Length: 220
Image 1 (tube, rainbow, N blue to C red):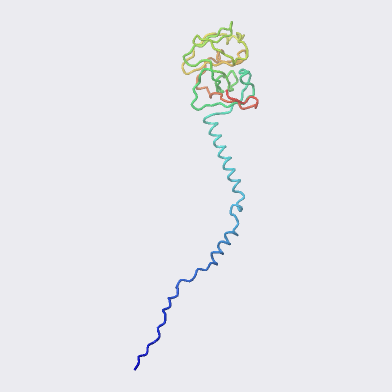
Image 2 (cartoon, rainbow, N blue to C red):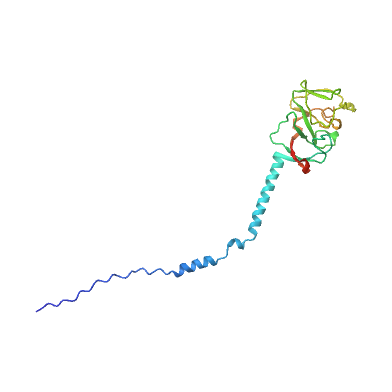
């Protein structure tokens, strides 16, 4: 008897158990991202806040600068004509400053009561340990016996009529300075016995820059 055989069929692969990815959620997310409004547009005050931060930072820097390193001072009087003029605004540097001959300096309000307790501006003629002599016949100032070249003075210097300003020889103590105005005939300075040499502790700083009026802007 012939044996019966069942027909063989080709094995079919198992269906992939993982469902096909649905592109719809991705497309939806992209669409929502494109449609979402820019968050920065919803913060109109942010730019203003950043500007205020910058301004406050600048103000803080200015406060520190003008309290610790430098200060603004206005010229009061004409004793420094024509180098500095009455009402001129100037920048005075203080930090680490040591007076040197030829510098223009500002002295604090307690320097001389007879000047009305106001800050005064003068030029350093000599420093501690030096000698100063004045020859009014020739209008010449000598420091340690050497005549100064002074192109900055306004006019020839004459013997003051004030009796407290007729001394002609000084020895500057250590830690002090001898100062004079560039407008010698209209300046109360170290030549006056009531003021004399100035202790360096009274020096607020060196004038480094003229700020106002605009026609006077420049370094000193």
